[in-house]
Image (cartoon, rainbow, N blue to C red):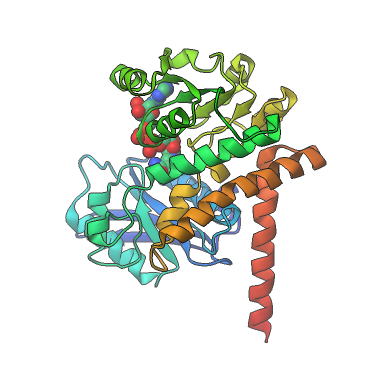
Length: 356
Ligand code: NAI
């Protein structure tokens, strides 16, 4: 297995391979970039088929967190952890506490949180051996479920996209197709319904879709019919890689923006959206509000500060849309560029401070 020459290594500052024989813990912690501040990122537990797969995943995800935090204007960096194992069978309190010890050894350079395969309850256990944990329930000193805040950020971002595309941020009278009615999608529907937008929804759980129909007057379509729904906006809030050759051709919406991570199946799909005149709000920018919320726990949770930072998603997206049009690049590339500028400036400041 190679590490430094792995494509996704991408200049990681630190990659830590963790092993704890008594609990059976095998994990990788990847700290991509701490130029702006401590690296924040979830800890995923997954039965990876190989160590290479786990390494690739953690490197890719931690780099993504760097750009997400930088684009959100946060003074935090990007990091991520993966535990190799099946969460259904291999997750024990001892293993979680051992993971906490590993996180603690990094002295705050990595701040962990729940992710796929781990739960808030698991982190109550992790918290016993490290204080570098965010996203806990209020009774455990955290800021609670971030999903409603993520939904608010998406809602604000869709308003910014609507203003750029149609001259007004108001979504009243617009039709929004929401894919996935889970923690984020459900709250997003509520915000959209309150703003007098019409809803078309889909979920692989028909019961959930029926609930949205009765709560918000949403029109329910089959999961595969959501792309071609007659809607102004398509809001993916289920899984990633849903924007591909087939779905781009089907889309009738003028805007794509939602909570799902890694929505573009490949980078080139950003260009294809652009060619079709569809305005894409990059996922890692529009879905950052949950991260903004949990990150604020590090310096003491402050709702007013969180609200201000979440509201900034609109101005950041405006800058991204303008840059993309001015330079004839994708909105994703423009977002990376804007985040990259913050990172380069922080690195230069840090280097100058070291030299004095
Ligand atoms: P969730 O697991 O609560 O909800 C996902 C929903 O999508 C479920 O109701 C599921 O039945 C549905 N679904 C799955 N496949 C589908 C399909 N093919 N078509 C239609 N519906 C489908 O997840 P949550 O927390 O709402 O997150 C949604 C997405 O946003 C995920 O990709 C997540 O990674 C991302 N995200 C979530 C954040 C949060 O604060 N919860 C923050 C940033 C990103």
